[in-house]
View 1 (spheres, one colour):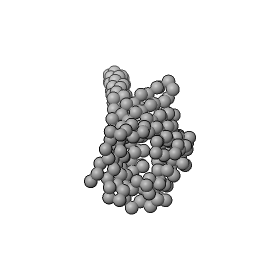
View 2 (tube, helix red, strand yellow):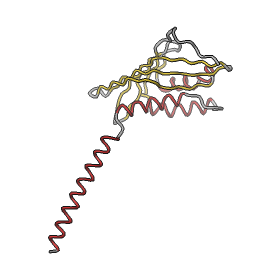
View 3 (cartoon, one colour):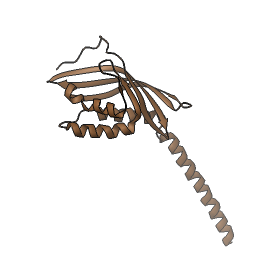
Length: 178
């Protein structure tokens, strides 16, 4: 009688274990971060990083950006934007981003509509995003909307930016004024 009870408990325990593991896997599959979600989170982190912080010292800004960029960018990452010199490498990109407050004053960056295309076999993603940069210089509000193309690569589950290509400004975009 005791062995029959032990076998019944054992079968019940195994069934509960199988159901629990199945539910856990299903929850991970449904609610775990997809590659697209990871990519969008990475781009959002970069957008927040380049924003200016009130009363932030330039040296501290550069140090903060360096940490974010080393995590989010490939070492040889590059930026191409019409108004800026082509920039390559985390060190140069950090220096460029750190100097933003001197030229553009207070700055906020938002990423709007995105189109994410992932090539799983190449571990590469291409993102086309609408990016809005809002800056205040000398009391004048400026808003610039651009299409930005990002190329990212995936290694060990982490997506890192390889290339940022900012399209030229179109003449249809009036600058906002206060």
